[in-house]
Image 1: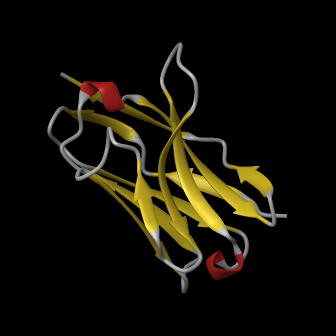
Image 2: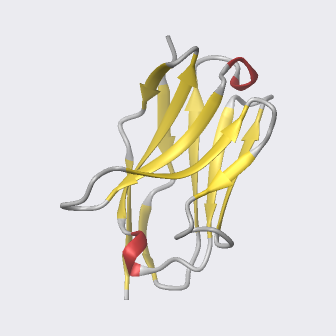
Length: 115
């Protein structure tokens, strides 16, 4: 079992930055993949960024160069630094942990970007 708690969402203006954090209930390096997803109103949930237990990262094309995913094994957290935010980044952001093909989800944190 992995419990996940997201924090850091809020309301910002276009061009500003936010940092989301996901706290996990077990060691991050004991989890195969940690991911951030987002779901905008009326749209399907989409994968935003992934970090593997080995530290390899990958990003959706829509956020590449603006978002950075990182992990802190000492704190068991995974952060998503979001820069140059756009109104289309508005969504509920969910933290996901994949461990031995089982997925665990947080409850999400809302990010709203005004134009």
